[in-house]
Length: 110
Length: 110
DNA sequence: AATATTGTTCGTAATATTGCGAACAATATT
DNA sequence: AATATTGTTCGCAATATTACGAACAATATT
Image (cartoon, each protein chain N blue to C red):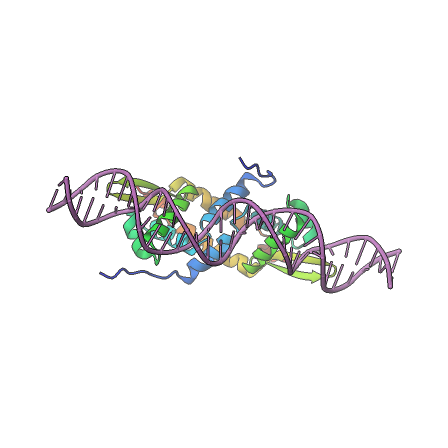
């Protein structure tokens, strides 16, 4: 018989995209730092991190690509902040994801 | 051992570890499939996926390494299921993470 | 014993990630 | 104009990820 090989849903793809962006402790630390403030500049973020500024800049670019943050140039500085809409989308996607396990009804395997 | 600078908290490291495991649509699909049932065998999982069985096996190994699932050999099959305790830990970590943004009080940047 | 079934592991290749220092661009200050 | 400040981009290296088919191991069935 033909195997029914499904594609991935849009939600699965978006969840994976956000998860991938959060799949590094430096980026988690950046997100938590940003989440605590209304805004902050690159320099303040870099100060918290044990990595070179080039690397910090790369991580910020990845978070931005994933849509979790946004940056604004305020010469000669760059202000970063959480992307509110996507933060809420990610929160919702992860909430739905973690809400769906039968194991939470005590019906886990075994 | 490769000694990393311990500038990140244990929670950040664990969140990143779980996020990394979920940072791929195939693995998200596997988790959602497993979450819906009490148990299931490798073959049933593989049937849902558009990838070779060797690749599916690798993804399952990664989810197992991350602690999100567990496997049990029931010859000649292998039964996989959600790791309940770690699922709950991950759910809690992501819940705390997404609960901490000031942007949710309308105090977002810009 | 021979064969079929079920998954894992091996070997390999292509691409992505992570990291650094150096060079660079843009603006501000002297 | 020259210099300082702020971050990004470039160039490079090391490692990790993703994928596949083939080979393999373990058990079940003939």
